[in-house]
Length: 88
Image 1 (cartoon, rainbow, N blue to C red):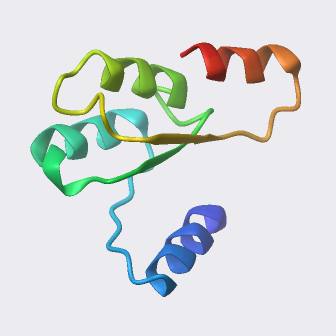
Image 2: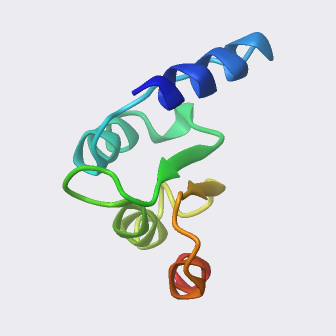
């Protein structure tokens, strides 16, 4: 999607290396392969398959990933969705 390209381009402009995945499962596999390579994870709340909240929960239970800061993006405006993201 175009929003991923825009975000990746912006991060590259700041001289950061990026990886991207279009599904939570793909992101999980990337993170598990080289956890030391990641300083930040940015995920969409509504990804295909495993959503951003599920990815965050899995990361929190993994010792090699639990310390990585996580930013979740969403187009949802519901208070319940915001609360769920904060509680994850």
